[in-house]
Image (cartoon, rainbow, N blue to C red; front, side):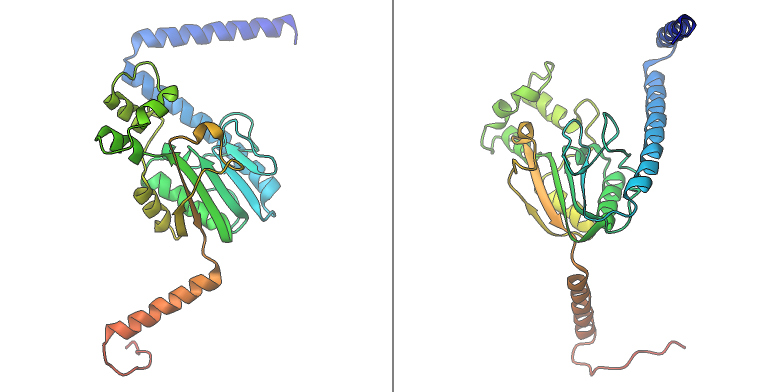
Length: 271
């Protein structure tokens, strides 16, 4: 890099700072927020397109993949680590279709990512795509902030331990218990939805998952700083044979209950 290039870089940097400062003085805050959000979305779109190309090049023929969604700095060796920031294996926007083939993954895992998706559209989109790319019998494992715990404590019917147990992750401006509830739900605009076991189970079951259950913290899978205050849930993609049996069973039930006591008849002809 020559002196001329450095000078151009310095000039561009100065111009960028001047423009930013000027716009801040001229434009109202609401408009600046919208412009920043638009620029952020353009950047996300570019990174997602790059990640799609890489996914098709590296994983289009692979099976048995383990996906670590929204990994942040918590990379897992031997997994496909996915995020939009840092240096993951793939940069993908999980609000979009996942550029991986059907049935290619044996395990999909995320920890404190799912609550960052708007519900219902983005959340159910992600769950549907996860179901699609999981193999039969594959596992979906998710960890989200446990919202039932702070609400029970706020109402005075919990174990009384939430406020003290989570003080390490609260910003300085949180002074009251209701401040804390607001921060739990919003986290400076990053959190888009809150879950308890009932709500999370219903969302997961909506797209076809079965055997949805709450699980314990797993030190071989989960991160230690998330142990306190996280709701961990695991679900399974039903194997095809079992799914077919259930469909047949449901069909028999319908045939048996539609016309109680009626003799079996052949298929109806459409005129």
